[in-house]
Length: 365
Image (cartoon, rainbow, N blue to C red):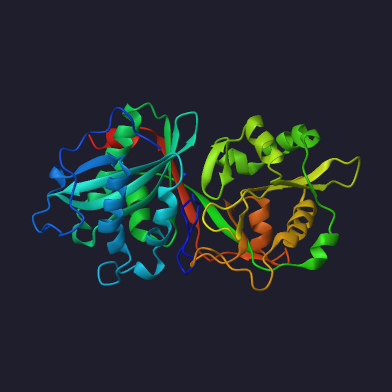
């Protein structure tokens, strides 16, 4: 899931979620950021995908290709492309690998790989190609070359998020690469409610750990993500006891107790957002029944933005925001308008594709 420009197209996040060590091919000469070489003679067979590790090289990539993404004269989606604004934030994030596609001494594409768990899983995000080489098979080739490099370096599986409005990427993923998606939906709360403070929810403690784990691992959300959970918007890690211990210690886990015996009725995780300081992430919601989930989401409105709250990112308003699997109860309740103050972020979805590392490269042979 990728950072979202909150316009008609979206994710963060989704932020969201690297790698390639020994197997990345070195490049004898990196492309210049200044004058663009002619791409009229672009040949896909001559394109290379390299990993950029030096900060200066990543900055040159930003100055060259990412800057063109913000130019409406070169990118028809410039008004809704989240990457130019968010790229400097991503440059500061740990565990992100930057891949650049080069041809004729020129950057023609890029993609980022986020290391999402310590078990050899990676999340690909931010695929971009120069308008001059689109429809050439460049995007497919970039994905396959990165997939091959990840597999060679020991990766076990790969995931990638695509907005449902992005027909070219969905066509690439589903028809050319034969991948099947899991659909996520963005939900948000942009309204503070003082009355929410009267709803009985509480911050989880270490004593709640076992009950939280039992509820989480019985929930559909963890099942559809193959045992993964979001540590932040769009950033995945293993749904382990250590993860929940860390979130509880940070005070990011909230509970609505059940009606009897103090049992947990619903649990939600609100980690800080990496994209904007006035935004809270919503990375997990599960409950024993609909009433418990509605009660918890209603209580969380006490953390919603107050009038005048401003975000540090121009395209991200102050809000509570998260992408959750669409078929889970929390998403369904919000989509059906059954939780006051909460709404779907947009009518579009985020489709997440997953495959065994190396499978895309092998299919091309």
